[in-house]
Structure formats: C-alpha cells, structure tokens
Length: 366
Image (tube, rainbow, N blue to C red; front, top):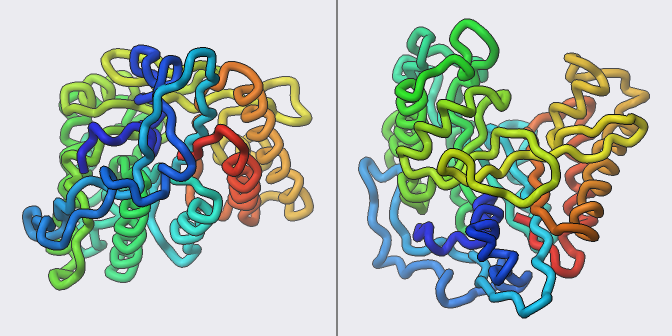
C-alpha cells in the first residue's frame, strides 16, 4: 500500500492527525463516507496490477481500498474525535473473534488496527525456524499454529486489509519479565525479532505448504509502520530499532488523555488512563488491565461478577470517551486481545462501546 495515503486508517490515523499539529489541529479529518466509500484514490487496483512478492505469500495490489479522504478543518472547527480499537495478537481461532470484530466494525462505520503475532503464521512443525532473542530456537510463550489456524488467520488478515484496516505487529514469541523477556533485549535483538515477524508473514505459504492459496494483498515491508510490544515492555530499545527500520509510531506506553507527540523519532500513541467506575484510581484502556484489577491473575473469575466487570470496563471507556469528546478531542487509544476472559465479558464491553461511540457525529473509529 502507499503509506502516504494512510491519513486516518488504523492506529496511524492519530499520528497523522498529530503531525506538527497539522492533522487535526489545522486540518486533517475524514468523513464516515470517506472511510468506507469508493473514493477513486482508494479504489482496489485492477487485477493486472497484482504483483506477487517472494513465494507469493504477499502481493502488491495497489493502494489500499477504503482509506478515508482527508479534509482540511475550517477556522474554529473542532477536530474529529478519533477512537482507535486495536488488537494484540490478532489470530483467528475457534473463538472466531477476529471475524466477529470485523463484522462489528463494518456494521458501525469503523475500521480497526490488528497487531499480528508472526508465529500465528508459522506451523508447529516449523517452529525451529523461529530463533527468538535470548531463548532457544522454537521457543514461544504463545505457541505456534496449525494449517487450519493459518488458513483462517490469513483469510481474516486479507479481508481486514481490503476493508481499510491496518495490519501492524505484536512480534512473535511474547516473552515478558526477567530471564530473556523483551524488556532485556538490545536494539540488535529487536531488529532480529522484527525481521522474523516480517519473514513469517512473507513466507507463510511455503512454511505451511499452502502454495496454491491466495496471497495477502499487501507488501508487508511497506504496510508495517507500527506496533505494540508484549506486556508493554522493552519500549526504549524497540523504539530505537523501529526508528531505524522506518516505523512511524509505537503504542506500547501509558499516558493521560492528551494529543500524541513525537518521542525519540516516533509518534507516541500510548494507551491512556480513563475512569475506573467504583474506584478512586484510573485504569488503562486495555482489557487485560481491567481483568487483573477485577479477578487478579485468574482469567475466569467469579461467574456472578463477570457481567459487572464487563460493565465496569464499558463504562470506564465511555467516560474516557466523553472526557475527550467534550474536551480536547485527544484520540482515545484502546487495546484488547481476542480472548474470552471472564466469560467473554470484555468482548461484550467492546461491542457495546463500538456501537455507542462510532455512530456519533464527528467520530472516526479506527
């Protein structure tokens, strides 16, 4: 895709809006129609423009379709309220949450950002191809995949990109904490991890013996411009590596509800602290953090409290939205996982937040 056209698609929209305050402060906005309409600049390339890359796992197919058309703000006009819905891992499994949220987005004039874990495109029997920094080859805290899982994940990635969603990276083995976790990695080790994440996307057909399958319709070397690190660790050295590799943003930090700024050469699209109903402290805009403060490390806590816990997350995110929408219009950055923690209550919460905010005037859900 032409990354210069990614003004307001995926998490990169907030970076584009923040650029020298020239995006939303002085002029870049989209329209609900532009985000999903058939504007000429974002129309799919003709079939003759398809150019396979490498083994045919990916392909150049022209400019990404369904990107919103930028518009300049009028004097005194408020910027639109951007809301970023992003997903760590982004694989399709038996829960079918990837496909579910694609449907939710389409039904509510929204796009989303999917941070793919590269090992989700690597079959178990090829696990030795992954050589994680500070770990033995074939190691992974989140496992690998099988042929069906790879087929299903590729199908979702393909459809998501064609709908105007962004495909970022959540890297590979998801190593956290001490003893070789990402927080201990050097810049060179981060570069190795990034190179491998790209390689698994660019060679999934060979690795999974699916040579007759359709390619992913994008050039991942050009598509990949942003990421979130595992457990939000290792940000300092990752950002150094990412800047050298041409990334545009990082979303691994924690911040208040303020407009993005550049940090160490990258746009800082940190998740944010929002009200936590029933508590005196604020909570990060991520399902995992709500869960830890509700059921602790148990991913399936008291069934009698699960609906309440989901409502807490929903209401906290809505309060954070209202604070920005009625205030400084800082983009709201939300991060989640395709997981059914506490009976799926956080997925229900996101369903309700999307339905509640994405159809409001002057809101762009990305």
